[in-house]
Length: 553
Image (cartoon, rainbow, N blue to C red; front, side):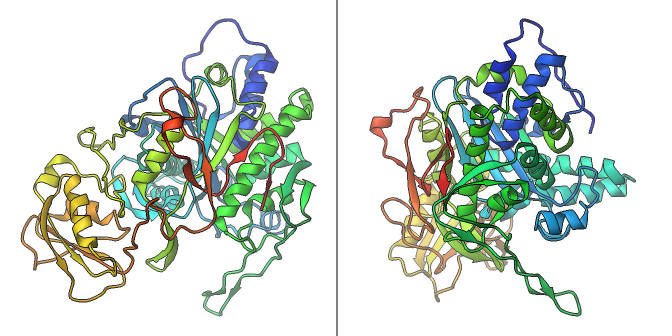
């Protein structure tokens, strides 16, 4: 992919150590970009770095910035493909990486981290668990369907690939342009989910991670307890159907600090079997590894080793993609507080595990996630707009602790005012229908009938009459289901039947939360929020702090 450069800024260059030190600290792919800062100092340009225009559409729909902070989305792509779409060598993927075949993983974004760099104070990084069931968005900014957040990339890439192939594109051009759609969809999905603007992004794939680790090995990691994750082979029948999915990374490490090579580093961040909290523990592994890389870059002389720096620069050129608006010198000037352990990683909470459409997913409350992110990033809670692509108008979040609206369930004024919603209670929660009716009314919908359902369905259902499809789908997004048309309902009317999956909320809004909760401080930047006035934020597990080699499960 050809590099697209923004206007070059002229002026006095900072010392190379300052550039490298500041830009080499925030995350794995960003740590490598510290080398790019060094390269900028020595050459004045970054020839060969892959640039992307995937932010173009996202910027059109982005919420406005409330301060001079910068938000960077780090995308870890679980793809066994090269940048030109060709498969990575089978022997390399299966024998060296223990990562299965080129058909496994697809184009899932198995690591999504938002790094928030405030004008002053501590930087905050939050991970979005990959299996969170959310409203996804297409590359053009239109609404997609409810999918796992990790799948937004692959669905958008596949849709774009079909259209581009019909136009005659093939080979590397087809791969690169369709990946642009995947990036755009991922950025917009995260941006709308958390209601924050994404200013920049960096993407690294499976081979890129390995190459980065190879250039830095050995890398220190720390485990709270010994781990043994044997490889289980994938088994298929004569027709190719999967009988046993297989898994395992082959990682075997003792408790305490270990020095790992590139292959074991990949296993360290990819393991999800034989862990108490599965994927959620894997997220903490990724955060801890990033902290360890930052520690090694700063404390063990990598920045001053020109040989290592050149190796990393080669990785940047081959395996890392960044947006075409990113001026790394500006990043240096905006990020004075990323070194010395001044970054804290947290994992956004999930409400509960569930099975939707035969898939195991994390059910989340988007409104709660937005509030947590705003508090963590030090932004005022009363400025909580959920912008719609059509109008850009702000709408208030639901005050109800019941399932809260996803980005798409917040209605436009027209769709809400013209829709009457009936709510029937088929769950075991007393008063659930009345509570939900009030919550929907607070969103602008017209309250309809409130009553008891004839039976006790396992899952919540949403039906709509003529002209109610838009409102029906928006309401259905609250519950992670798909609305269906019904001729039995009057035009402009929507019916919600609450099922057994409607859990009773507790005071903290975390009933049924899986895994171990942790807390994070509020008002991290100190610019807008009042930490003393707000309770500790509930996160998915304890925070991982940079500045050393943190121990994790």
